Image (cartoon, rainbow, N blue to C red; front, top):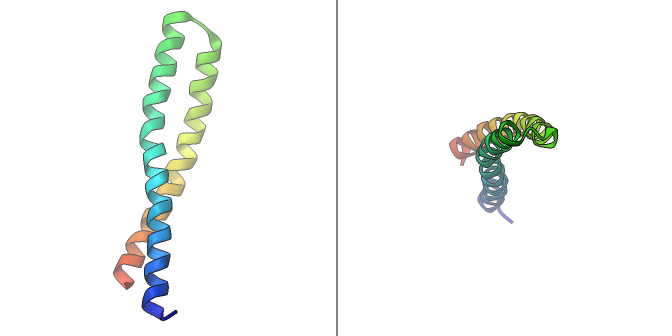
Length: 79
């Protein structure tokens, strides 16, 4: 395998990983909003707990997504 093919393979894997994280990271705030709305509507504390847990997951995904986006931009510049 030559260097160009290896670089393209690495870029493809990084892009696939980043796209999955981006989709989950965009959908989680909507799901948190729906869970909190349901908590306010019904008063069930399970919805509030769910929204809080998803908020922690969103924070982690945002951090990982930002790092993978930086890696992608560096790979694109080098490729």
